[in-house]
Length: 315
Ligand code: SF4
Ligand code: MG
Image (cartoon, rainbow, N blue to C red; front, side):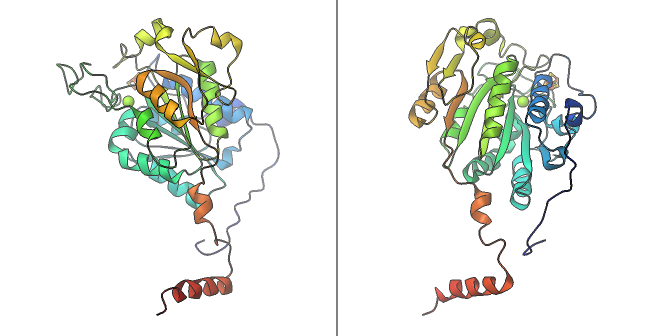
């Protein structure tokens, strides 16, 4: 369809989509794995927003979390290690009408996919990116990942991880054109739901870092946060994540934070374990909108534009 005006309209009969319409197969994650809760929340949002399954696509790389597309009753693409984002960007660039979701992990996105992560943030294409951050390579059985805490004993570092972990929040906030950065926790389904919903509502590249429990390989990494929620910092603001009063009671430590304030977002992410919306700028342009300029031009108009472009170099 290159160079031709594409018409992706589908003749879809109006009907109500139930949870079952977004479900496929039985999830084969370990019992107690945080991935189950994230999948349920994503399916509920699809149902609540009545997303067309025919127009929704879940993309992933490699890792435990990357099995998510198999369990969605939508289109899906289970890609290569670290390559979820270039696949998602490719889909979005040719099919901007599709609702693109990405499931990736701390190893998949923040290690082998680092280059793609940085440039995908900069391109700011409209997609919802969920990073299942369990601080370990789970699928390959407990190797040190970029977010593994220092001293954590893994199969690659039985004496303890020797390096300070990478902070995915501060790194993402430092990338030009960043437009949406949030963090949530898989063990609070209400906050998880509201955060992913806000990310999905944002037009642009929304990155949600999800602290995700892996009871098999990194069970002790988030235990202190679960047992003592005062070690988390809940971000509150009228422009932030929607919070019911009952949820506020669960977090002793709270801070009012305007998600447009980048320098405060950076300081919070650097010094705390935040839960909420760190940064949101709805005015950053999306690359698919920039690059689609002239897409629907006819041949004659294209020739005029081409000649005008060449004339710039006439001596
Ligand atoms: Fe989940 Fe960990 Fe099992 Fe992977 S290994 S499915 S992350 S509990
Ligand atoms: Mg992981």
